[in-house]
Image (tube, rainbow, N blue to C red; front, side, top):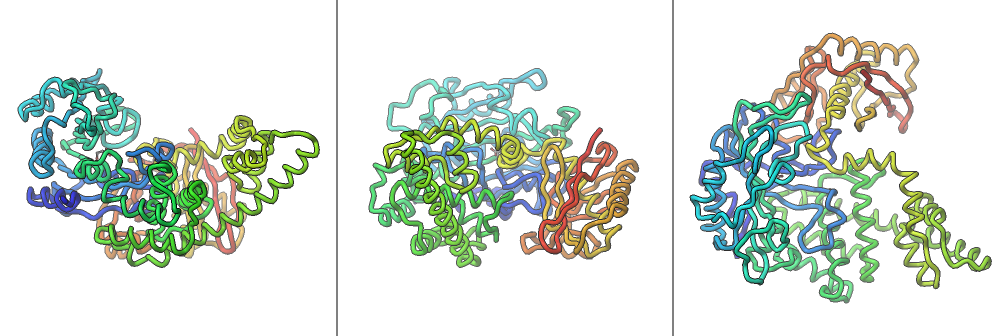
Length: 586
Ligand code: SER
């Protein structure tokens, strides 16, 4: 059996690409983005012209997590955690070589017959003309006109027309993954054609002022490991490939149920378990904010679907599952093996907590049922379903299930109404961050990110250098910064901090980014979290001579675009930790 990841990395290594390490799933010190969603995320500065220490040709296998697809998980191709193979040219080769590499790799190294391949190409828009170069390269390689679809900016522009950052048109490669006869004409809407590889030609930068050409022409490609593995192994369901089959077998064995009759539940359990293990391997624990909240949601959702197949998520199951994941992935992500016990304990603790929540919820549910029955009512209204959820953490799906067990019904539409009303605001904030990646780097976010650095330094100026960042969260409306300090700030101190930040904004300080070793960064006086999560080389952002901080970015180019900074709240988070919320306005 071909080992896809090794074959891919060797292929590009032989063609002078340096193999780089996967960035962590949880981006380092980038509060605008919860998870790493694409291989190019760690390469943004280099796509924009900075020299990469390992050269102009790079490749890797990247851990990715996308919550945007969570509702699709349960079908045969979508996952929350997945791996992406990528090769990059940073101002080196461009369209022709990139397409030829992909074609050669697929047809000669993976032995995929050309009859099963089709491509999409950018058909042009007001700004950029049709990609005739890609068209002629694909045709020269034997891809016929019938197997080419010319699509617009919604399909063949990455990441999209609105995100801030490097961008460009792309050509996507599809594989006909079905036993049916292969249609002569390629229809990208026909889901028997599965996208396996995306070659993006990043020659633009999108800023608040619009698109401008970058000084260098880059290539950024991404190939889905799960999909391509399934194709190579001739299965039409990703979960039947060697990546998943042992995990599905374990679920079958422990639940005593059959995969064919319980596909959706088993796929969700397998997907969420794998994702939770990967996230927990980066030393994260469930909590009620940011990545910790997503981990909590993943584990709890997994437990709920496990209940459907009467699978007990106990220590033995978690240990067996984690052992399989470690044996498959430790070669690429050593943190799995190092943190194995911690991972098992993290998931186990959360499942125990969730069981308690469920127990309490069930007690309350029974009380409600008694009262309603006495009144002759057999429907639990939306408000009550919402209260069970909001106060007792009891999921509405469970209320519905339990209700039907006792011959009652639950008003889920009504619940949705309350849920929307009460949660809209916080949900919007969270969803923005769930999306992750560059999509979240709105101009507002980026401004708040730079303002956070100014605030951090101003706090140290006013309160002393013991002030250290303890947390940071940004949305398009405000920044929130947690820091170590033993007492409430006085009004004068708050005013001083605010004045300094506004002063620095008005000075129009230039924001500069450099890359250096962690040691050099520390010696240069850069502040930062200095956790073991940093790699050997780190990015350091300086704001004039005022602030210097280790950070993933992105930031504005000059502080003069930040507007007016205002502290709106200062409060305690826990003993020794204070929180400031602040806004920017025009
Ligand atoms: N950035 C592109 C993607 O994520 C190609 O790697 O699809």
